[in-house]
Length: 430
Image (cartoon, rainbow, N blue to C red; front, side, top):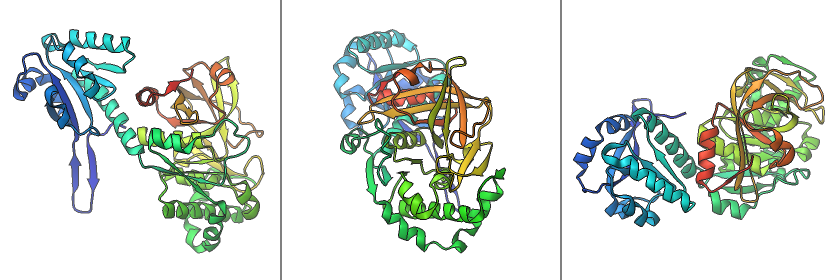
């Protein structure tokens, strides 16, 4: 997840671009940059493996681009007042880099105590140089995700499912808070695109979908063709509208085309395009956020069971990115017993994170690390079924749930998700 810079490839060469870290220096004796690097040589030698470091005196903060990645470096004692006096002009939250040299840690503790008393968000980055690099990388990922979300477009094909009574989002407030735009697309716009696609254009994709499956139940070749045609139509509408993510409620289309969106959502997620169903606006934002923050694909599922005995939940839906699975089967869509659904299986004991952003402007959230558990498959639920033992108490789901659908992503990303959403003044629901 944490890359050392960025690789840009072309047929001739690979260019390596270092990340830039601005360090706003607070030092009581105003020593020059060369001396700063000499004092903190052990730390800087590790940081420079991944960052171009730009040292800026706290007296010249105005020279920094407000949109650049910046932290505070405390280089000596006796600078607490200067930091508090400059607070309004410093990057927020306050990330305080300190290696303990020249009484710097004591100042950092004073500043953090002041920040806590004022309800100001602040964090000390301290430890071995390697630990500090890891923490800085975490915050760099948070910074990059926030920047990359701005200007993203989420397509809403059709209207949200009527039963999702607590999953609405205010488009304007969300755009103001996150910089993300929701774009409504009429379902009828998909139909001529779908009809224009020939079987010859999608033969290879149909064959790949079936050949990689561990098995097929209750479906025939025509079902597969219609499902993959719908996927191709979605791809073209996404490209035409410049969308970065999409959610679709396809019940009306299902009646007209005799197919569902399950295969389309699976294959779009494989391509790195967050795609969800039922027009769930909160969940598709969560999926897009997770992609920008972790680089991982995600799965939107119903909470179909809660077990207090092992503190687990059962998540189910009829689609999952096949790239997230250890293997998959093709079956019919559960509720309608038609079309093609994806029954994906995840590895037992795999680390995962369950997340949900909610609220009218997406300003509250749930997050918990968990592990995949073995469980009995049920014919009475959606085809993909994943049982997860969570770290957070499952009482949340029965007492204060944000809504039904939650999103699962592979890996333990609880800390970075929590950091990112707290950074954006969101409230964690437990």
